[in-house]
Length: 245
Image 1 (cartoon, rainbow, N blue to C red):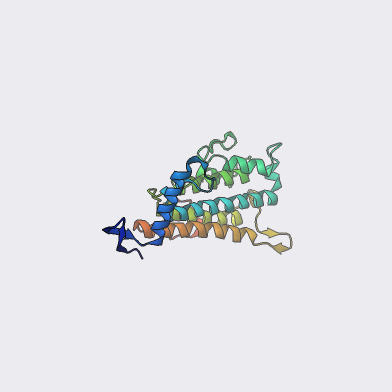
Image 2: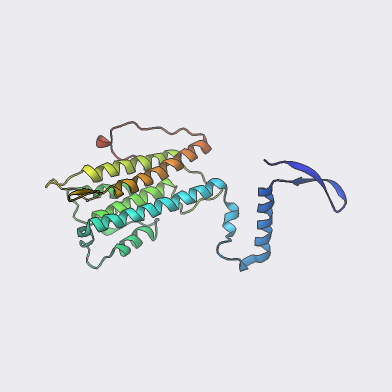
């Protein structure tokens, strides 16, 4: 708890002294940064002085969502190698770099320059002949980027939209259902996930569950901070459409 008490400095009484250890630490850190100037290491970023606790929490959620998405894309390519072969010379790492290099520019001719939810829909479109894993990755990456107000990191005065974060979580739920149940004209899944011949592998389900949890947690934190109630959507996943983000 922050409290103030009187102390004597240079024999002058009556000066208020902040006894909160956190505030003292911030003041000391600021002074050190000013003194060392440009000689500090990369870990001591002056931008961090403009960060609040909530923005640091947001940064950790952005990082977690990106790491989980990258793992999902890699797993989908390994489970669906035919998709990677649709573009000669491409590797999984090439595709990952394209998706994550610049979230401000996720326009690709092979996807008809579709982004976010529209790109996700290509993964389940009967007429789409391109790389469905790439379309899904580009779509989810763009949707998550929009959910965090198109920011790579957050600062003290940045405000997130709890509804966007909530909607992104529901969209990942819908995506999981479509991956498991949507079939092409031959009755085969557009993209293979959990089930394998003679066995069941639930690693995809667990991974996607973690992605949903990250978005839901950040939505709840933002709702509490902004005092803006989330409009909860009640519907059946099977008949649901992707929500706007």
